[in-house]
Image (cartoon, rainbow, N blue to C red):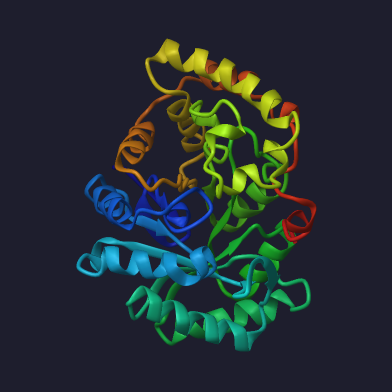
Length: 328
């Protein structure tokens, strides 16, 4: 796989999101998930993405087991800042104070079974703590060798600039796909002005852009997509699936899947863009990785955008309480 640069960090052109291996997308299968991580590394994927809140820490533990004998082949990314109630996993808060940053990194290092994290993100910006305090504490971890590079997730352009003034930010992670393009007016230009890489999560529209789903009945009972997510609620999913049909028709003309076409569109956003499609199965991983090599012409890119126009997507990305934490 070709490589790309996130700030001063060189990684494979496509990464792997590990969240769904432990929670949110149906029943976990640790054996297949670990095999998927190993296959990803064999295919040239180097950036593995997790967070301390995924599976209440279980995802970091899983990733740690998967890379224990191949740590030198991995650019390991994790996140802190979203705090979940152990007695009610749906209850969440955000913390970015310096003391919490220190606690969080020690716990993540222990769960991951490593002495350093290559890319450490603040998962959501804490509105009650100045970003200068949070990033200042993260910078201390860099000086101590526990963290190599810093990142922010779902931060606004102004916050990104303030954070970068404290310590270089290598990557900003945010949702970016054909049906999530709200970062384009401000966040993308700010990152490019400052030389910060962009890491799109959910580049396949939480799986819908693959064309594999026809209704909420196709999701497992414990899949978060069927429980209060606006784009999957009411008549929104049906409206969004109509656009996927147009994408599938374009993909058929190219002899690829709708998911590969949607992912290739994200890959074409720039050489500073490294999407992290998530999967827990090797067969989908291999399909995703193949999209990293798919070349699209300007006419094809325009046709893809016309098939899934951003303004036509029905529903917000998250419920209202979660939306308030984005773009701070």
